[in-house]
Image (cartoon, rainbow, N blue to C red; front, side, top):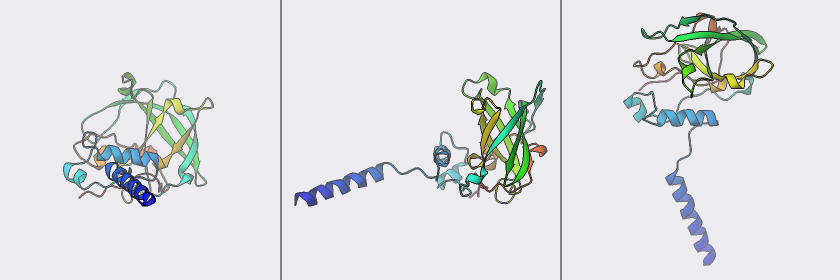
Length: 204
C-alpha cells in the first residue's frame, strides 16, 4: 500500500512539473533561445496575429558540415559608409575584414562588417555583422538573406574564427515590415545551398 502511495505521489509531482514548465522548443540551445525570444511578446518581432499562432521557427536539420573555420583578413583603414536598408535609414558601418573558408569542398569568401553605432553600446560593442544570401534565398530561406552574429572575442590569435551556419537567423523584416533592416551586399552571395539555420517564415 505504501509503495502504491509513493508511486502516486511521484506521478503527481511529475505531472505538476510538466504542467508548470513547458519544455523549450528547438533541437539545440540556440534554437530554443531564439524560439523563446520570438514567443516573448515584449521582445518578439512577430505581428500580433502571427505571435498568437506561434509554435516555433522552422529550421533546417542541424548539420555539422555547415560548421567551418574561416581565416580572417582584417581590412586596414576601412572607410565608414552608409549601409542600405529596407527603409530610408542609413546606419554607419565599416568593413571589418574578409573571411575565407571551405564548405562542401568549395572555397568561399564573405565580407564581415562592424556597426559604428554599436561601438558605443557596451552590450554590442564586440559584435560583428555577417549578412549573406545563398542558393536557397527566396525559396527555402528568406529572399533578403540571413544574418550571423560573430564576436570579436571569438577570433583566435591566428585570426581564425568558427562560422556555424546552423546558428543563422532572419532579419526582423522577414516577420514584420515595420522594421528597418540592412540589405545584404551582392558580394556576400554564396553560390551554394546553405541548408542550415532558420528557414523562410510562413506568415498567417
